[in-house]
Image (tube, rainbow, N blue to C red; front, side, top):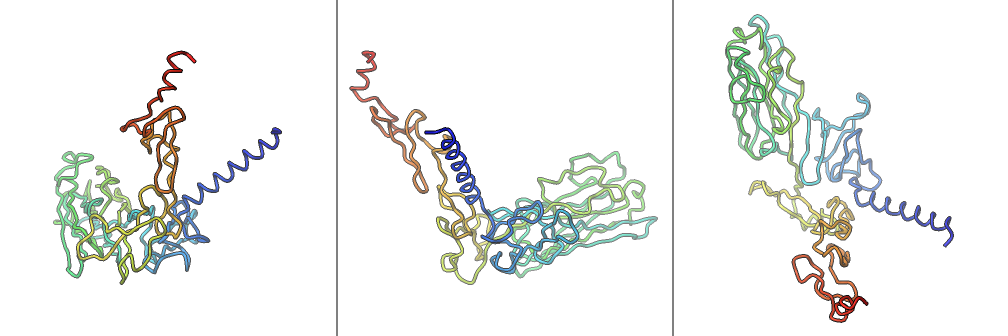
Length: 346
């Protein structure tokens, strides 16, 4: 075959492979923006009409005030930094504060936001209070019931504060319950920070992603705490019909109730069936995984043959061998004629 023709075929094959890979990993609905700034926006979320499942999955891409643009949950001030298909959303939430100067309140803020169909992840977050003359509350709803909890943090001197420690001296934390919505945080001081104002004039409080929060003594200073902290939300699909009736999941995908869901919730997730990967909410979002391309994904002996099939794979022996071709099975054994030829050096 002429060299030029061979080269053209190789280039064409690479283009087709890249196009196939791009299609397999496409997360947005066809014809819809897949990103807002640096954040990928997977369906069922979307930034334009026709690109999201329903009003609860609207993402506002603010291109006016930010460069690059930033995504926000619906029309709120909740900044979205990451969305995963398995039901997690990472956002940035404003920190509550109560600051004093000479015993007088000079700066106060109590953030609130409504999560509607989403909830604050109880496994990924903690409620944290920062300060040395401080207490704070987190409020919300658990179903139809009002919820309120808090903790207090004390210290007489900056010397008693330890970086990375959040056990009541300069910082306290508590777990939050599953299913918390309508979040509101309020920060307070016992004595207007009168005795600690030289090194700690403020109380700060927030529900934060525990994996991203590491207490620093610098947080105790005036404006020492960031304006926002990361927070993890849980999202799920809720419809009047069952998941199967609503037909939300795409081909090669199925309905699953979240493992940590409440028994009273009718919410569900879609997941690609075993042997498939991609976005299970798109009609053709779950693509076959080629287990034969990665030895760690199949159980075939390396010296023999792996055949990829939709959703799975099979192992077989090469010509002159017999067995099941698997590592933990019979493997592949030379046929008698083959073994004899090898022994005779033929």
